[in-house]
Structure formats: C-alpha cells, structure tokens
Image (cartoon, rainbow, N blue to C red; front, side):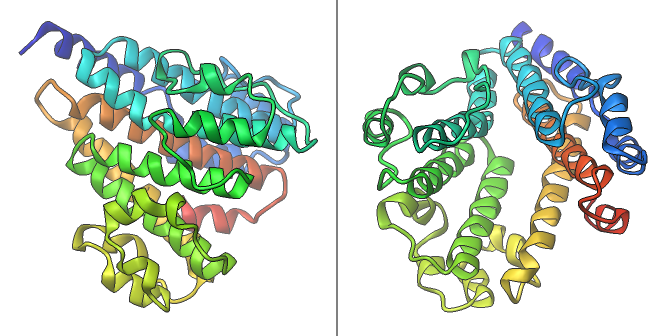
Length: 306
C-alpha cells in the first residue's frame, strides 16, 4: 500500500470526527434562539468560520465555508486519485459561486465567494465574468460543459447535472449517490416546478440515468424507469410534496454509506470519499438545526428528517 494512501486515509478518518452528529445538531435546534444556536456553533468544529451574532443566512454560509475548508485540507493529504475524487465531490461549491455570480449580475447582492483553492474547476475564469453570456461561454469551454442556456435556472440545472455525472465516475458508491441525487433534482423540476427540461442542460443526467425519467408522466413512473440502483431515491414518492422527505432519506443513505467506508480496514479511496460524505451530511443537518432554532420549523420536523 502506497504511503500516500496511508497518510490520506488516516487524515480522512481524523477529519471525519470534526462534526456535531445527530445529538449535537439537535442541541443546536433546541437551543432556544438563533443567537444561542450560533454562539454554540461558534464553539464547535464549525467555529473556524461561524461567528457569534451572525444572521441565519450568514451562519449557514459559514457552515459551508467550514465544510469546504475541511475538504481542501483533505484533498491536500491525498495521492492524486484521492485528491481528484475530493475535487469532484466538492463541485457543489463552485456551483454555489456561479449561482451567486449570476444573481449579482442581475442586481442582487453577492456574498463573498467560497474560496475553492485546489478544488476549483473553472472558477478562476468564471469569477471575472461580467455577463450571463460570458458565464455560459466559459462553462462551455471548461470541464463543466455547455449548460444549455444563460439564465440562472438553466446554468444551475446544467451544472448540477454535469456535477452528478462527474461524481458518478468516482466509485460505485458515489454512482449511487449521484444517480439518486440527480433523480430527485429532475423529479423536483419536472413534477414540482412543472417547467420543461432543457435538453442540453439535462444531457449529463440522461446519460447517467437513461432517457426514461425525462419521458415519464408521473413520479412513480419515473422511479420505475430509473436504473435499479437509483430507484431508492424516489421510493414511496407519489407527489412533489413527498420529495422533501425523500431528500432527507437520500442524505441518510449517503451518511450511512460514508460511515461504512470509513470503518473499512483498508487504506485507499474509501476513506476520503467516506469522510466527505459524513462531513457533508453533518453540515446539511446542522443547517436544518439552525432553521429550527431561528423559528422556521418545529423541532418535530427536524427529528423526522435528521
């Protein structure tokens, strides 16, 4: 076993402990106020970026920044294959930066971009874009590919579908996550929003899942047309109103798989991929806990999802 994999696996397992877990997240949710929740979070493994007194939006943004920092550290400890895997899994942050950039170009305030460092794909070229047309051109000539349009919705959908295809190439486990996640995305867009899906934007998802989901007339029919290993994502979903619970089950699946990969006795790709999974799931859960603390949802909803 190469020394790089040994060091990378040890670091991955150590970083995976920098999370709150279900009990810690519930303590945030039931802290009584957003101010108390953020203060507690600032003293947690997320304290590198979360600051006491932050608003809900700023605190949730800081959660993402803390997660991204952990992924950048993790990537730096891996041999080439492991670093490339972490980079692929971290693609969400570049998508978030582009989402924010496009909103800023339409006149909406823009938060500080996530600092991507070694996990960037094309952000160094995208950051200076001054129009939506330029964003599409840069994406088209990058590993992201043509998103199929220049509106924020088209770009966001196209990048997310392209990201799913890239994540699916990492391992068998990430294929299941990517396929399930993009199935949820397309179901939400097709049956929740009711908008026709632009062909070029969803082409990567169609290559991953097959074209059947795009032609389905209902969510159960879409589920039946998915590859067998991806059907779990839409299991028991009969209407768009069920998709929020399906997303929570998807996160639970990712986290469970991640823990299994971390517990494996061997050094290799499983450890960094598993670490990304459990750290991302924890950040998602804590973001929901902050919503509860701010009065957005009852704690019973948090318990049902987390």
